[in-house]
Image 1 (cartoon, helix red, strand yellow):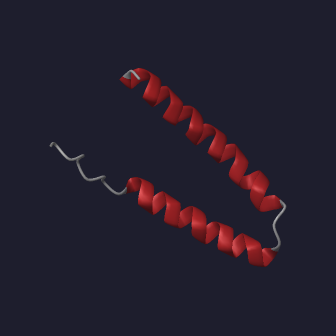
Image 2 (spheres, one colour):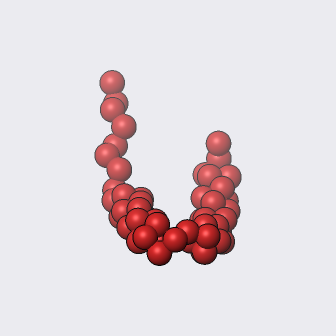
Image 3 (cartoon, one colour):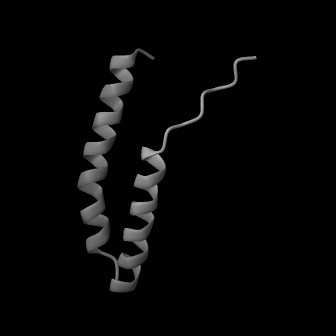
Length: 57
């Protein structure tokens, strides 16, 4: 996969996720929203962490 294809796919995924999260959250109970918000926050933290380099063997 070319770098531009990957970047485009990542951008599209972020757009879709940004649209889906409010829709998902809207159908959850207040207690479920708390858990959902926590999970989204944890996912964002994991996504922002640098990944280790792949093994070079």
